[in-house]
Structures are given as C-alpha cells and as structure tokens.
Length: 176
Image (cartoon, rainbow, N blue to C red):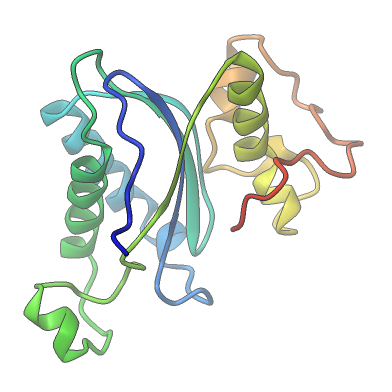
C-alpha cells in the first residue's frame, strides 16, 4: 500500500515532526540552527507560519502555503537537512540511511493534517501552544521560550495566563 499525503495548493496544515531519538534535547539545544534552517527555507520557498512550538525532541507547526503551492514535504526536507548539516555527527547511521544520505537525526515521516475550517484551525493552534504544558516542561504555555504563543500575546490575541487553569486543551486522536 502506498502512503498518500493530502496536498491542497494554498492549504493550511498542522504538522508533527519528531527526532529519531525521542530522549534527545537536540532541537532546543540547537534552536538557533533550527531557526536559521527555517528562515532560509522560507526565503527560498515562502510559507506563512501560523503557529509553531519546538520541544526538546519534537515540534508542531501550523503553516499556510502560497495559493499555487502544495509542496510542504519539500520544505520539511529542506528544514530537516539544513538543521542536520549544522549538528556535529555523533549519531550512528544505518546502511539504509547512509544510502539515502540521511543522518538518522529525524524520523523519516511526519504527521500532517489539512486544516478544514476556522474551528479546526483554532483547535490546532491551541494544541501547538499548550504542548509544552502537556509534556510537563512548564506550568504556563507563556513560560516556554520556543513557541509562537509570544507573538500571539504581543498581538493581544492571547494573555500571558492563557490556559493556565486548563486541564486539557487538545485535539482528540492526534499523537505526539
């Protein structure tokens, strides 16, 4: 069976991207390198970042692609490879990965979900922002430094104490 991704030009998508080593802290330890890889990719292949959170070993993002573009996979490939080139090679690479010029830092696949409507978008943006709380990294979402929640607070769309008393802001069925 062939795995098929949803590909709507100009679509808004939710993503989960994981490191291969789920115990790693590589993403936050090298956050500036990740930001640079994203910035370079955005310059070459524009997209709008609606929301993003980077945790130690995985990240969630919501992007909107240009009206005539559906290539989110290419963008993720550029981000992942750009980041990987900046990290010193200490990981063991299998023959399978070496043959594909992969470092073994990332899980090969990522999760994507095409946003269907405004309610779906809001649920996924909330999920992105509450994720550091969900994983026990902070008590308040605003206390996590690697999140687009700070842009939302600055714009007045959320307060610093947003969801601080919420037990669960989530999107049923999604996996980290």
